[in-house]
Image (tube, rainbow, N blue to C red; front, side, top):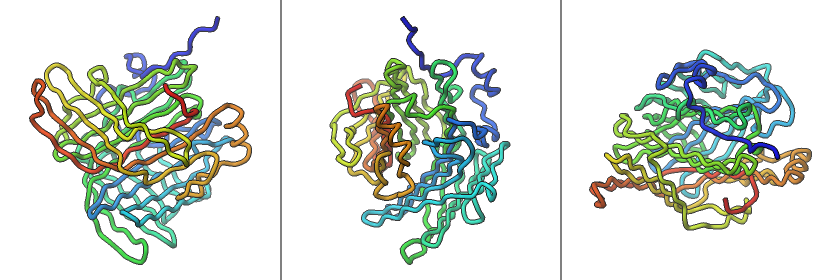
Length: 367
C-alpha cells in the first residue's frame, strides 16, 4: 500500500534554512520574481483597494497563467473596478520582450502603461488602456508578514507560497473610467503568490479574505488540500490593531462555515457566513464574514462574465474534464464583523464592508 501523501505548512528550522529566509524578518527580495518559467510554475502579485464612495479596485499582475499548459513567461494583468451597478473589467496580455521583472524587490513592468513596484512599505500600482486608467500609491500601515515560511509543501516537493507584503495600508487612487476621473482615498492590501505545481493538483478549495475593521486589520484563510493529500486543512490568521500584531497562531483558531448557497454559474456551493474564532486563553476575538453578493466570478469551462481572458483553451478543458477538476472563482462582497470577548461577554463589536474570495478547484462535494 502506498504511503499517504503529506501536506504541511513549512515551519521547521530546516525549512527556513532551505528557503534562505528568516522567521519574522522579511526582506524586499521576497516580493521579487521567484519563478524561472519552468513548466508547472505560476506567479502573481495581487493588490486590492477599498476606496471612498463604495469603490472597490483589484489589480493583479501575472508572470504566467495559473493554468499555463506550456513553459515560459506569458505576462498579463487584470483590472476590476466596481461600485454598486457600475462595473469595469479589463485585461492586458503583454509581450515578454517588453517586460521587466526584478528579483531584488517587487518590480513588474508589462509596458509603460502597466506596472507595479514597491519595497514592502511603499508601492505604486498602475494599469491603463484605452478604456480605463488607475494609478495608486499605497503606504503600509503594518509590517510585512507570512505564516511561518509562507510555503505549504505537498509531498515535500510540490509547494504553494504566499507573502502578504502589505497586510493593510493607506491608498490614494487616481481613476478614470466611464467618462469620469476621480481621486479617492481608502485602504489597500498587497500580496505575492507563486508555486511549482498547478494549484488544482494540490488544493480542493479555499476561502481567503482581508479586512480593515475600525482600528483592526485582519487576514484570514482556510485552505483544504485535495483528497490525495488527506483533505488536510490549513487555518491562516493574522489580526492587528493599529498595525500592531494581536495574534497569528493557527492553533488558537476555530473555523466554522454556514448558510450554504448554490451558485448556478460556477455550479458550486459557497458559504454566505464564515467565522474565525481566535482564543489563546488570554484574548478572544471573533471575525465573521457575511456575504451580500457575488461581484466577480469565473470558471475554467466558460468565459468569466467580466473577464474574457479567463476562458480556457480546448486542451485544458479536456484535461480538466478527464481529471474531474472544475476550477472556479468567486469574489464576494459583504459585511465583516469583529467581536472582542471578555469571558462570554462581547465587550467590543465593530463592523465594516469587505471583499473576500472562494477559489474552488475540485468538484462540488462536502469536504
